[in-house]
Image 1 (cartoon, one colour):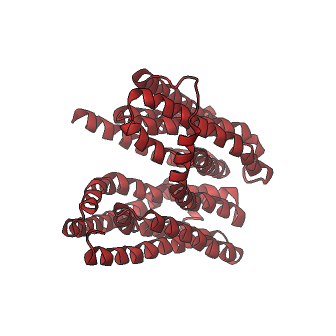
Image 2 (cartoon, rainbow, N blue to C red):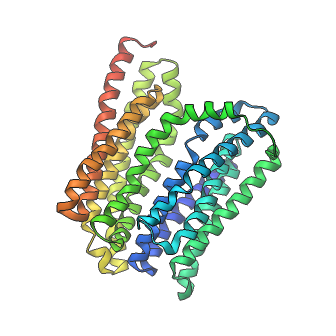
Image 3 (tube, helix red, strand yellow):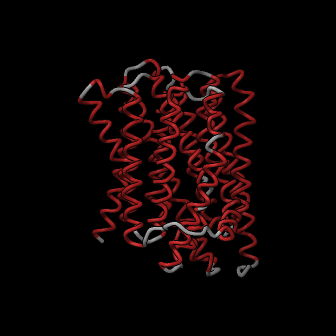
Amino acid sequence: MRLQIFNLILRGLTLASKFLLVFALAKFLRPVDVGVYGLMVVTIGYCAFILGGEFYTFSMRELVVADQSARRGMLRSQIGFHLVCYAIFMPLFIGLFVWKKLPWAYVGWFYAILLVEHFSQEVNRILVSLSMQLHASAVLFVRSGAWCLTVIGAMVATDSARDLNFVLGAWLCGSFLACILGAYWVGSRHGWPGIGQVDWRWVRKGAKTAAILFVAALALQGLTTFDRYAVQDFGSVSDVGAYSLFAGIATAMISFLEAGVIVFFYPSLIDAAKRNDLAAFAQRMRKLTLNVVVCMLVLAIGAWCVGLLVVQWLDKPAYSDNFYLFKYILLAMFVFGVSHIPHLGLYARGLDRVLLWSQIAAMLAFAAVAVPAGQVWGVVAVPVALCFAYTTLLLWKTVCYRLMLREFKNNPHC
């Protein structure tokens, strides 16, 4: 029990650290630097996701049931898969700088951070699959929390730390330490992968298995990446700074929802679905609906109050002039939070392809609204397009969930 509590504390501290860093950057850096940082964060996150290829969704299940000797071969093969991804995609990412989406001054930071960020992310997932949850939480804190607190403290203490290069350097150090720590724990507990033959048949099987989830996540992750670039295209990098601040506050609602509500319903819903227990499934879905709606309402009110206070505290025109964007971003995140209700029902029944198409539809809805509206409305078209995208996501999943539930009632053993 103590370990579970400590695990929750570490994860909560990590989330709080990232949340507070956004405020510190907005306070001590120029809005244009906050904008560049926001672009770097979402771009590195998206590129790391591409390098990962959602392969962990396959490898984690394999590692759980494998014996120790087989695990070393699996880890070696997974490394082989990622090296192939590096060879294919790393050269292509330079296009972000060639096409002036990111400043050339940060190309070194981009590649260095991307490398350690992806490696530490995969090590963290491996620790989870090996039932080393506390170690995984510690690695996550070093990777995403400890360096944030260091930056905040340094910025408060000295003017020399109030520089974007200092922030990126701290990020690089934090992720690098997480790599070392995570790799040591994996190797000391289960042995090092070592040099040997890569099982390419296993790799191909994993790539095929992860393909559907990869495409789905590619679309959904794209919404929270391309929106920043749309703001940059329709406005300026300073506008991206303000947008990133407000989006950081709004998306924190989803983090709290998933950690405080969603995680507790996953096991029971999947269990009821696998047992084909319609009564238990429906009862848990009703309870989930109530919890999600109430939680999102409370979080939305709280986020709005936080946004008002933060803008007053910052006292910078770049944020106060763009505060009108916040209500649209907040609405988009509220709708996205509610979409978790049918999502969990569909996921529990194993309808992955439905989730795939819903996320692709959401991405298309975003583009269909943002591109033409941005030419007329400017920056505000981006959060409005997000509202349309997440509404499309919610409606698609809700309709499919209703159809699934009707079939479940007619044929509980399907």
